[in-house]
Length: 248
Length: 224
Image (tube, rainbow over all chains, first blue to last red; front, side, top):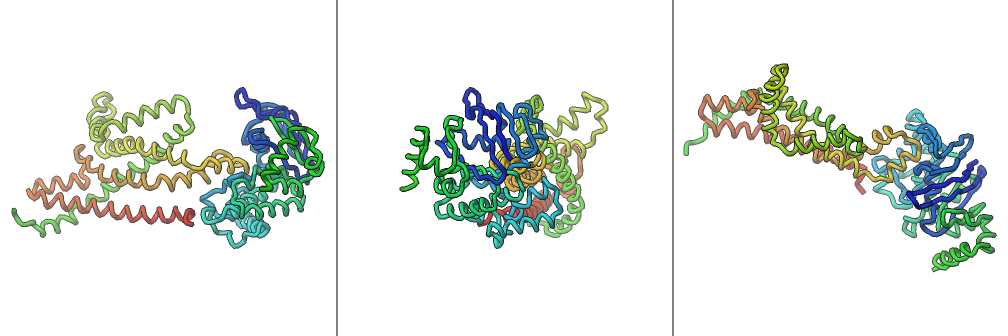
């Protein structure tokens, strides 16, 4: 279970996240939508402590951290319970696909090498890239790189995988294979928090859709409700725009 | 023009080669210490550690801004005058000191640039899976920075091998010092110095080969 209580993030005088309260149950797939620059990515980065929240508390599993007083050990522990998939993949370019996935098991969990590589091999099979085990990121397509990025997040055995616009940097031809892998994870009830502009993914896969604007949760509910009967005018406005552009 | 004394040149090769190990040891020791020092300077600069950062900037500025020969004379002749305890510094020690400090100043800047050049998102990715800062440095940043810095660092090493020839001005009989003595005895200056030049040249060429080999290995991950 993930629980954010009154979580805020300020950059100087700018309030990016304004006292966000959010609970995500184990196995729940939550999609966050909203206009650009409204704090969606920052919310994900705060949960992974890539950004330190300015205020509030954060619970992941049995660990609760007060954001303002988080120690280095607590930050490490929080990062190890959450996994992150980056918009630009952010694979380690000096490591092969297999090594990218095994890295966390080797270095953070201190598994012996053969065990870590065996597990990484299993994950490669799940993401359909067994034949790319020894390939370096530079020789892979964007879609393959992002699937390895997701594989690296899967290796963490994290309570939740945070997806930060995972298909936004991809050429259109690679979007489907990445969304397909995410659907596969969703079917296995991996807890997921996804920021995306792929409305069809939100509609088909999400248990809950959250609309964020101005650093606040404006509206949330099952996808059918949000897409068919948005209550807030900002949600309606956003959906009208994005669905028009998705249709083109 | 007199004909070159080829027999003298051939005979000189084994004589001069006996002094090559000292030349290589001077450069090897200088490079080792300079690398360690340069890495420390680079980390201080990248992390902008207060006070140390400013001191490093001044240090780099001085050792890049003054000739190596001046620095060597300063260490060998100058320091013992101020501190009598330092009269124990011999020519070899002073040379290694000079090479270390001089070249670490240059190398610090290229190592710093290489570290800063590593893709920021990979740093975030490493942190996101729960790596500590030192794991991140050791496993992700430094291996990639090494690849970027290698060509320049090898250049400095080559430059350093040639710079060891200045040690003869401190009375050290390395390759250049030995050549100088031989030439003064035989009066065959051209023959002696061309032999020395060719020995330096061959050593540097061998190093370039090594550099190419290393670069190919380190670039393996980046070929499409």
